[in-house]
Image 1 (tube, rainbow, N blue to C red):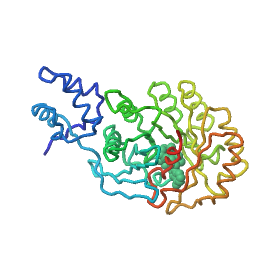
Image 2 (cartoon, rainbow, N blue to C red; image 1 turned 90 degrees about the vertical axis):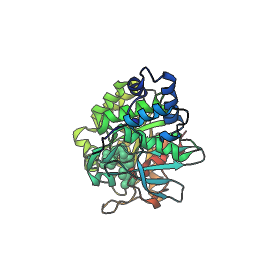
Image 3 (cartoon, helix red, strand yellow; image 1 turned 180 degrees about the vertical axis):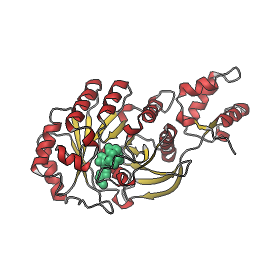
Image 4 (cartoon, rainbow, N blue to C red; image 1 turned 30 degrees about the horizontal axis):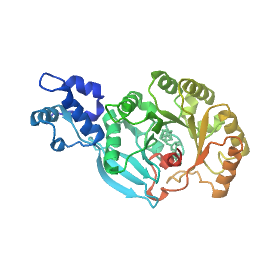
Length: 348
Ligand code: SAH
Ligand code: SF4
């Protein structure tokens, strides 16, 4: 049986250098390797032309260089492309690339499925199969960078399948490789992690010193309603969530974004608006309104454009930093976080 090698994209540059730096491999060779991997986004050893054959053989013996494998892709009328990717064990995930004039955003997955069981979400219906490895998350990013050439990736959102904070260690390592100046050298200012509100992990993340923007899927600011939509609220109440967010804000210069999925006749009434204003009013934040995207087999309804506009106008009287996702990308299906990330493409 063939030996299973570790994927190189799961390692930090420090770890790779420590393993490879030996008498016959000089530091500048390692820098050349990093240049191929993280700047040129090349994963084929045969094409790493300035590396000596002996070094390439050693690399091939030590690491697996493969990226997630594209098995299908669908382009939307708005130019967003959804990729179905296959992982080494045959599991499948989605990633979405969304190019516009000013920005190109990648929405990547952090798990195969999700265990949090939110009642409005297609991924929640799948249940959790497994966490993604760091290599599988970095793999999506490198793959996206490679596909985009000669254009560049400007923004990354962890809003695809999965709850990133349920895969905390692999997430943190991914963010470290992403921001590493010898690695992908991608600005934390352009990286957003979206969470359903795992309060203790928000605190741990704030304390870790690892930088990224935070988006919180709020979706309701009334305890009972949020429990109904998002069972995670039974574990960490709105009050605990708010206190964790305040902790994050105290340690970070970034605002947080509250995502609010608008569901007709459920979370768009006067009392919902009042609760949303009360919850967010004293926090340094933006609000991202997302009309609910229909999911086969779920009983909720999407709001009309008028209902959406009314809610948006009302919230904007109090908080000017409100964005709204246009109903674009719907024609390619949207299990991947239901394309909620699209709001991010219209921001600075
Ligand atoms: N688990 C994380 C990240 C993935 S979900 C989280 O919950 O934040 C990404 C976003 O997609 C969340 O804001 C979620 O509320 C939203 N979402 C899920 N299903 C949706 C649907 N059917 N329509 C619109 N947005 C949806
Ligand atoms: Fe999981 Fe996020 Fe979907 Fe909830 S909204 S089930 S946390 S992916």
